[in-house]
Image (cartoon, rainbow, N blue to C red; front, side):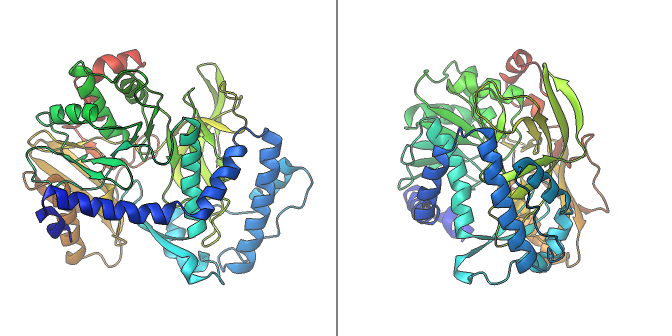
Length: 480
């Protein structure tokens, strides 16, 4: 299918994008989505005690569901019945052992709830931040709730479902061999322009700058690493957006760094509202204008495991690994799930006025770029592993401009077929100009914060993300 799509003329590729866009509109924006969005939008600024009471009820229901309908959670005690929501939540959570990714990967059948209607279920495959593939079962209603969380944030920013918008994501919608514009395709039913993140070479950036000024959009969404490159190009060309053209910029799927936020705000002249979630649909936090991430209390509970207390910029806080509980994960209950990210929870209310828990930051995907010999910067590579359950973890290493090494920690079943599929997937994103070596290793070293960096590159350091980034980074106080 990939080869067939690449061989089509541009108008036919856009027809294919539109067909897929129409399918996604039907799949995502269901009656349950609209009902959930309306109900949750009304509760956006509900008082914290009301939020905790609702969470206590949702947690009790999920725990009872999990202990009676799954093998893995069968030994759990009943949820704590206390009248005080804070105490009920704390004591119920204390009785649940944390769930790690390896258990989720190897005991998926035991975690899957009995008695669910097959027609209501969806199998999700995640690539994860480390190249570790997972399979997650969820209900269609849970997916609708996942979309409702994001759209509640967008509606609050003045964005409507049918607004035109730009997307800078991981879809390979432009053939990699393309050497001239357009480096984007239109999904007309979704009023969306999909920009390729695999053609962000210096010689192509003027075409991106022209396109974002010429094409209609009320908001922009995508990977911070890609948005950063385009925003820097806008500033370098002296062509930032006029204030008021965009309602907001919604980065997601990677950690948004301070210098990236500053670059995006200057280039797009709009609020940058971050969003943190996971493909497991276990957690969601939506950003506010003050830069904090607010826990969407209807969707999840978030704990800081073994947190270390301190203070940042005068704000008392605690930092540690996150445990997340997805309050609607009925098909495969995710209770106290070690998601693998580190969060810094604020211990004082957010100045924006929104009640409930908020985080100063979540440290998740902080990656370098893979840079091709012709200068393209590719910031997300974990799609390569989406269907590779034989890969325990992986990391791209680029120490030379003409070579790329893929480190792989194999799982049982890994062999020549898996390696060939990996090679084809990598080639489909970076082309043939880089020498590619796939190297099997027993372990991949972690960062000082314990995270595995998906891309480690001396050639495409994130800190050197664009000609305009140095001045913006200085103004933002420096990138970590």
